[in-house]
Image 1 (cartoon, rainbow, N blue to C red):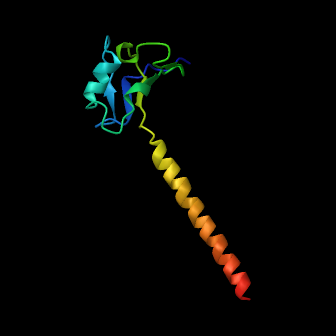
Image 2: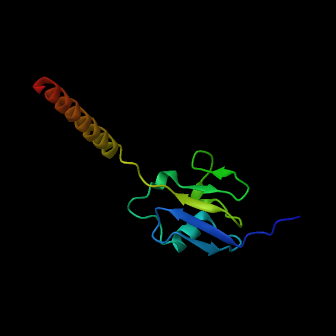
Image 3: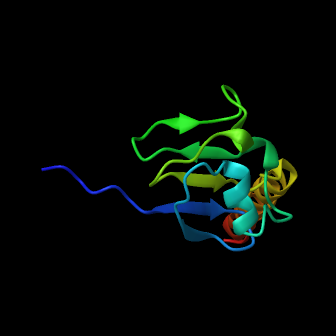
Amino acid sequence: MVPRIPSNVNVQGQVYSANAFLFAPGQTVLKYLERAGGPDREADRKRIFVLRADGSVVSRQYAHVLAAPIYPGDTVVVPPVLDKRAILQRILAISQVIGNIGFGAAAINVLR
């Protein structure tokens, strides 16, 4: 049994209109990003990649992604920017809460 060829290209992630678009021969990643409204403010433009229908990946490390051709069934992924400061702030807040619980437990133990 031969599977049918998909007729769409998905654009996912930090774009203004994540959607599935009809495949048009000869189009590049840039054209599909334009159709999706382009990357939004939260997008990591340096990490855009294409997940091919056959499971392979086209990334900036090995190719010029925006000029890469698109084939039926491909998915263009625009990841978000990860703010490392926000992650560290959350870890600090969690550790403060855990520390305060420990101090509270010690105080209760002393009062007994």
